[in-house]
Image (cartoon, rainbow, N blue to C red; front, side):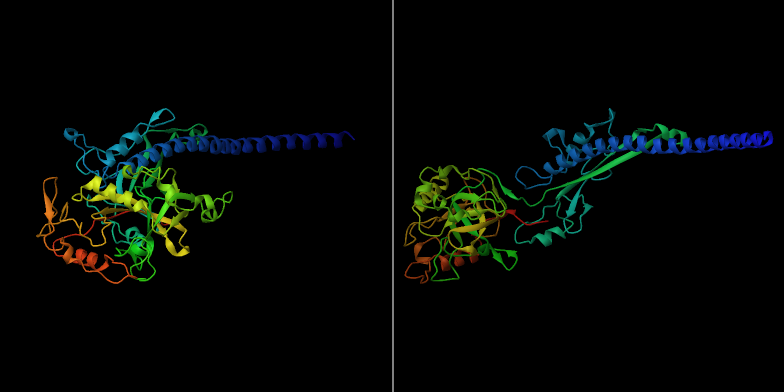
Length: 431
């Protein structure tokens, strides 16, 4: 009996020793898991703060990518003229951020058109979801170019990339030191791009007039149509290039609203809608208009035309082009409603109420001279020598009414004269 008890005690002691070995091995694994959880959590926090810095820098750079008029890329730093490049602005904004109370590293130095290292201008492709650095300062012509062509063009500068790092002051480790990792270098990258706008901001539209998208497209390419702005069904080649609007709209995707604004009697367009509009001042739409919204329209004659004519005379004295921004709609859904497709800026050189066209302008500032050069300045106007006289206007039959169709064709083709300026402002295309 005693011999059996001794053997039992011996087995128990052996099991206690095995438990110590298992606990020791488990502690090593637990420390490893602790290092994984604590240090990875710490790295995640640090990286999120770096991402915030990169995001802020990239967004600031994209906002600064072009000058206020869109006529030049901001790529030069020059204190003497208070010029700051998009790269420099992106760099300073990113550097203003902290990561765990440590300064953020952004490897970039100011210089003439410096587009290297951690701050770069370039092209973002929506199709490929990729960024291509490009230091070019050349502007890309946005007129008569499709979205797909712009998206595939690496010379179309539309984005800024910023990389923020913890390099000089790496992220310190906790439990990972046991395994020989004292710190970690972390970085985050952000790309901000200038995309095609999905909104027309409030007070951005200048006249209660829309343009039909079919009238400015030839196939899928942007162009110009010549014809009556308001519908005349007697001649389909020159009819319905635009409609009147009171800017009443309903979001196409908002199920709480009436699915068709045109069904609302109170939103139908009438001459009364324009009585209180300060048309000459522009900025007429009271609310934001979104791509896909249904805009209430009317394609009939409106007394507002006389008001617009008077505004044109007041603004231009019939010698200065009048630049206005108008909404672009799909006119295929009937005369009282159109789906918003974008906006376009046009330059008006003539509005007439004269059936005989006796008030055609004979001079216009900013047009091309006989050598094809732009004539600029208040005191320098290109003279329309041949086509300005009313006798030069050719009319065509349009349901018993005179039309400017042939005249405008002649004007557009006239040697040495550019009939109008064209500038694509917004296109509502999905990336």
